[in-house]
Length: 460
Image (cartoon, rainbow, N blue to C red; front, side, top):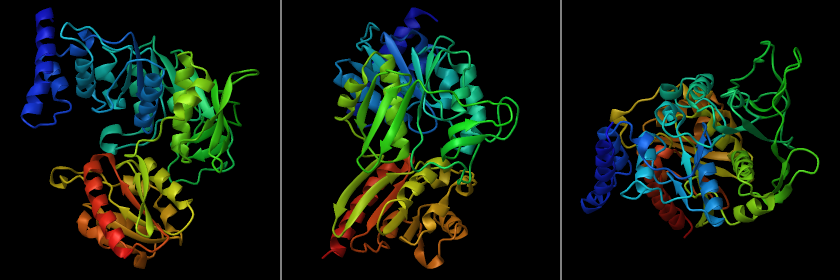
């Protein structure tokens, strides 16, 4: 590749941004797509900050990336990120285009890049992170990700050998990735809600990786996440280097500490009582410790952050509370965790299920087997008094709910999302939960406005 070809790609990509604005187009990834089309090796040559942090994994990578960006920016660092673009090669390219001058000099101290697991082979040959945060590995869209062990092998083949991993020790699939790379392990000590036997439909890691015996757990959080060991050969999950402990969801506190006697520690304020977000905090803290920040510093900065409202948001509407709860579509585990969380909340609940509402269902399809890996059984409790299933998969949701033991009289089914909102009952004192996915975010906000209007009218 010639230098002229690279600069042609860079300048064309930069010029495309004002052109898109003038023509009224969003084109979040277009500059990166254009750069890669002109120069396929664009990622190799584009200027990068001195330090790069990559964040990947099935769930939590967006929240962890946002936490890292917020804390690093508060600490005075100028951070390049892709939080407003995609996590594939074109989105990464667009962020890097925005992060350099016309002479290809980076304008940032550090990059925090959320990277899709399947995009690894297109990104890591050209971007070699100093640190790679691996949140977890679970089943995801079967069309793209097949199985978590397949993704683990995919990552192992892609991650540069010099990259240091910050990896979840409570996930044996994730902690098996790139075994020869330097690494730091994080995890969470036993919690009051832990069990020792899996109660979920999915447990993708039941066999000892050393002797093929049956794994058991000192404590198990959900699916295959917990402290595993093999009674047959003595294999045990890795020990923590950074750990969360003394989690108190009543007082919303947790201690995060370096393992070992005399290690640095601090009491953190929980950003959320959901286990996913408790892990996200520990994950971010483990990475920030690698950058030399004390736990007191990290906790202080995290106190000034929060979980972005696209993930979880609560507001009062008339006589009810309206909760926006993200439940990643095509992802059995993400929906299971959301359903489990809601099932443990007090009071009476009404649900609007609108995952997979893409607005383009004629050109999209998905194997619906993920619905049968998902724990809809959490929604069969008596305090969930009404469920409205909507969108192109409304009838699939209804069937799955019936199989989960939800009585038919509690279920309404309406494909049109706005008409479905009109079926909500707004029982005074209850909570209305809207479940939506990443692909349906824009539609979810439009439906929310109608729900708010209907809720206010019901209160009159």
